[in-house]
Amino acid sequence: MLEFKNVYKSYGDNHVLKGIDLKIKKGEVVVLIGSSGSGKTTLLRCINLLVNIDKGEILFNNIPVIQIEENGSKSLLTNNKLNEYRTEIGFVFQHFNLFPHLTVNKNIALALEKIKGMDKKKIKEKVKDLLSWVGLESKYDAYPGQLSGGQKQRVAIVRALAMEPIAMLFDEPTSALDPETVGDVLEVMRKLPDDGMTMVIATHEMEFAREVADRIVFMDKGVIVEQGTPLEILNAPKELRTREFLSRVLTRRRLESS
Image (cartoon, rainbow, N blue to C red):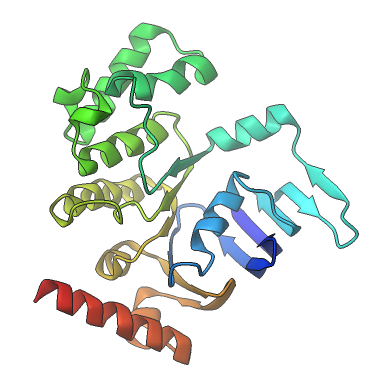
């Protein structure tokens, strides 16, 4: 479904992605792990062109979304095709990105009305169904400021799902949450693969990665160091850098829980 071919991205002298090659199959759950600054977030943002790549190619269902050659020549989807592509890829951000002046209902309904052109009755039914699915039906008329962090993130997930995407991207969806609310968000995310949703998730939640991932990709300093099944990566990593990262993360987790 998604493919990176030799993708590079820099911010000035900071080389964030260095020749990324990655294929993601339809219905696959791919979890990205690695230290902060390893390139996980940039990779996610490149998928739906929140940031443009400097070189390489990104394909969606074998169709180039963006292609930039060595000589700088650039090929990009037309605006209409690009907007259509982006509606197929839901994005859930670390810090929710809800509109604080709009109610939960209107945060979710806005894109359905403006982009999908749905009528208000159908939108209301859809929003209520989705909020019920994540246990937030009582928050229909609430404002984001009246919600906990975990509730805001579940609303953000619903907002993305309302567009009926065929793939979902999650950028550290629990890192800004109180530990007591993390479980509620992860529980919603656990349901998505059951419906065949393709997911790419950047996270530090190793046990969640072990449970839901078909494949774990370890990134470091802008490159993919190692990838494989959860058993291969979390139990028997081949690369020294992977072992060092996991040892540090698991040690921190043990200290936090003690």
